Image 1 (cartoon, rainbow, N blue to C red):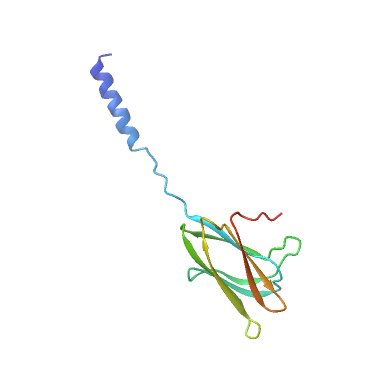
Image 2 (tube, one colour):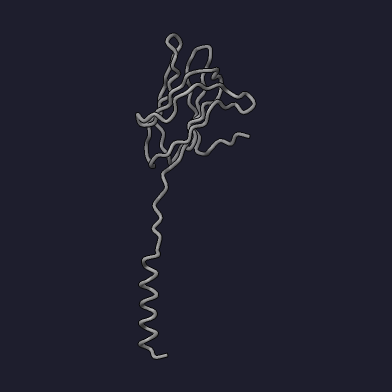
Length: 129
């Protein structure tokens, strides 16, 4: 086969492959807000950067120490997490700022007596089994 034919075939092959290249877009960072201890049929709202990511009633499963786990898609960087227990007489709320590069789990505990929310930030996803 002549060199010119090989050259043309090579160029066609390389040119044809260019259209088949898949560009991978970076996936959004994912972190979790885990509602853990002392929730008992509580109405809870969770917002991240003023965007509601969960609204509902939750109760802690004591064998797992978990009431609800909410996965949040977000970009890397800083995010404001607001958790609110909605109750006209004993409601409470608290917020915190997390960096997705440093925090993958925001664990939320409700002190039933004082109705105070506490946050623990972890650089890994907590396993529940």
